Image (cartoon, rainbow, N blue to C red):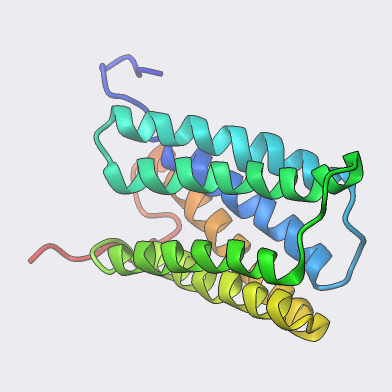
Length: 191
């Protein structure tokens, strides 16, 4: 959506909040506070999935390859994760711990390389992608070994990861609205 001055709005807060809020809710489940419910799945479809896809398309429009790739990819991550959870309930063969570990493992590798990309960006994005890398590899290990305690610990780490993404999205909104740094992002200094 264009502002009155012809500048496109920043799609990153939408993507960060879609990722962050969905990650927090899923990992409250992983930490053992409540079972997997339709609330988590609906959030993953609509806010984690579709809203991030929209943010990713808008990032392409403003020429941000990193943002476009991140938001579009993680939007698809949430949609495929919901599909992996829902299909067995519809009679399709469920995933084994090994196949889910492989799924999470490739997402962990992708996230690790995206984290490396954040070393050229803000400290907030480094924290988000660094903690997401740890989270996904912890979940992959937990699924590969069947170790529920690792998955529970990953849940707490995932709450931190999601909260950091929520902070990043809300900081961008408030900083823009107030025209100054209200919530610091640790912007990388130009050389």
